Length: 289
Image (cartoon, rainbow, N blue to C red; front, side, top):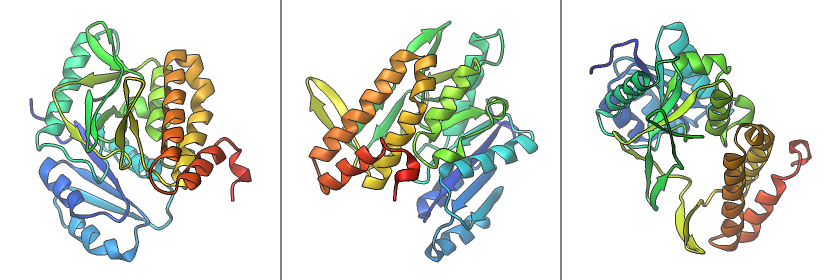
């Protein structure tokens, strides 16, 4: 099955992009929006090269506001130009040239399994291949579909009409948990978060490493103290709505961010700084420096 120009729009939010973004654009050969989040002038050569690529539009933003703004710029273009699906990719992700075609086909197949309404709000690869190992989503079956509660936005194919219904990505979150919030609101609106084994996504999850804790393999990231603060704060902010929608998923999400914060604060560099960062995320944002 071949996609047409109105099937899938690609959006890649960037900050200080490398040539990997050029390679992604060339490899996927889709109509593409590159939304740059106020990169320094050192990124100008890459952004100029991207502007010269066929079917590629570069939006240069001059205030850094996080990834959600870039995703919404892609969503607005998709909505106004009649695209059905929005493929979102981080600048450091790696995919095969047939990634978009295979993901689109999986979305169409999922629709055939769920005929009551266009209930698939987003579909993503079942596994994320990180440098430290494989990340698998917890799954369940709904009328033959493999579904989960949330997926990372990179490598995910989002239904444009569904995203429009939930007012897109929450720009107040900035970077962390933007995808989690979108999946939460899609689930609240009655859409499914679907998975497929037909594609692979290579993506580095915050310079992560896998550790064994009580027989369980846990992925621990090496984010800065500032990022740890927003990771905790945004997860705590989403927790009440998550508990109303899926108590199991809410508990699982809070457990994951807690374990990541604790182990991150006990290992690696700047342990005390990372611990303070995670703890500061429990305070209201207005009290942060």
